[in-house]
Each structure stands twice: as C-alpha cells, then as structure tokens.
Length: 151
Image 1 (cartoon, rainbow, N blue to C red):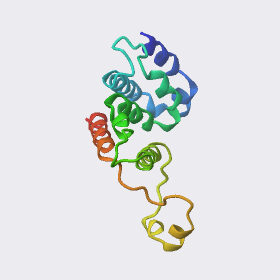
Image 2 (image 1 turned 90 degrees about the vertical axis):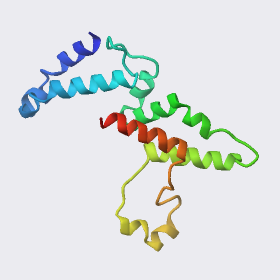
Image 3 (image 1 turned 135 degrees about the horizontal axis):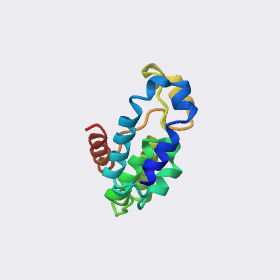
Image 4 (image 1 turned 135 degrees about the vertical axis):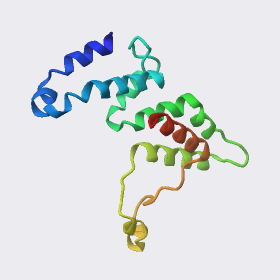
C-alpha cells in the first residue's frame, strides 16, 4: 500500500505525463517489475514496507544498481569472508581485495581499450588504470545477483 501510494502520486507528475507521454503505457509494467524485484531481493516486504537494509540501499541510490549488489554482498557473507585474515593472507591482501571490490561497485569508469594498454598512461597513473579480477567469493555473488536481476 505504501509503495502503491507513492507510485500513484508520482505517475501524474509532469515528468511522466507532459514531458514523455510515450512512457505512460510502459510505466505501470516497469514499476510492477521493479517492486517485485525489490521484494524478491528483500528490500521491500510483500506489503511494500521497507525492510532491513533498505535504508542503506536508499543512501546509495545514486550508484544503483551497485547499491543492490552491495546489499547482496552483505547478506551473503562474502564481504566477511573477504575480510578474514590468516597467516597466509595478511592485512595488505585483505585491504587490496576490499579496495578492488568497492572500486568495482562504486568507482568504475569505462575507458577505451587502447587507453588501458597505453604505457604512458599506465606509468603516470597514481592508481590502477585497469582493475584486477574480483575475488572469487565476490564474483560468485555478483554473478548470482545478475542472474536474478536478468531473469
């Protein structure tokens, strides 16, 4: 009911109704899909109430869909697994894996493949020009989330 009320108030707004009238026939279907998806991943309850980590997802709304992938990583325990230190895995490795994971989610910028192999750029860059592969535990959760989102 809460979600339905918010959607019903948004639909007649000028952005949808006046600026883009061709969006109107598709909009209810898209909103239904988005609502069902948010219920499926546990951000909304079946009654439309925000649950658990919904506030965290809302704080990161500008980085969507990475905010929802971040929630999936939190719920799965992959970030906890990533942060485990051992004699073989020191703090530097943990920090590097966390940095790669968060860079992948929140700080990626697409570049042309030629620039990714340009030696002058690679030597003058203060950070990584091309991110290494995601840690396997994180990659598995991202792959599972993508499969859920694209079904």
